[in-house]
Image 1 (tube, helix red, strand yellow):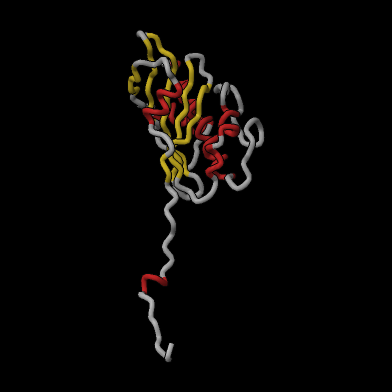
Image 2 (cartoon, rainbow, N blue to C red):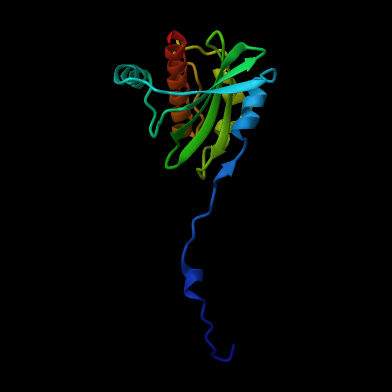
Amino acid sequence: MNGTWYTLPAMALVAVPAAYAVEYMSIDASQRAAFPAGTVFVPVPVDLDAATRAKVSAIANPLGARDPRVWRATAEGKTLGMFYADVVIGKQDYIDYAVAIDAEGRVTRLDVLAYRESHGSEIRNQRWRAQFIGKTASDPVDVNQDISNISGATLSSRHVTDGVRRLLAFNALLAKQ
C-alpha cells in the first residue's frame, strides 16, 4: 500500500434503492386464464354518479383506489362474466390486480398482475388467492374474518382484500343497471 490512499467515486457511497417492480401477468393473459371460453372481451365504461360512487366507497374504499377497468367476457353472444383490472396501494406502491366474476356474481379468479413492494409478494401465492374464489357481494370479504392475513404482507393482504370487496360491490351495481 506504501501510504497510497485510494478514493472511491462519490456515487459508490450513495445508497441506491433496489427496484422491486415485477410484472407477473398481462391483462390479456389474465383475461384468457379467467375465461378460457371467452372469445370477446368488451370494454365497459365506468361512469358512476356521485350517489353510486358513495355507496361503493362505503362498502370498501381501499387506499389509492381509482375506477377499475372493466370488460364483459362473452362467447357466442352470451355473457360469461365480468373482468376487472384495478390497482390498490400496498405499503407505499401500487399493486395491480385482476378479478374475474362470473355471471352469478361469484369471484372465479384473482391474479396479481404487478407488484412493486420490497416485501409482501406472498399475496401472489395460490393458496392465499384461492380464499376469494366463490365470494360474492353478500360475503364479508374481510381480513381476519373470512380472508386470512399474511404475516409480513399485512397491508398488501388488507388492501387487496378491500379492493376485491369494492369490485364485488361495483359488479353488483353494474348488474342492476
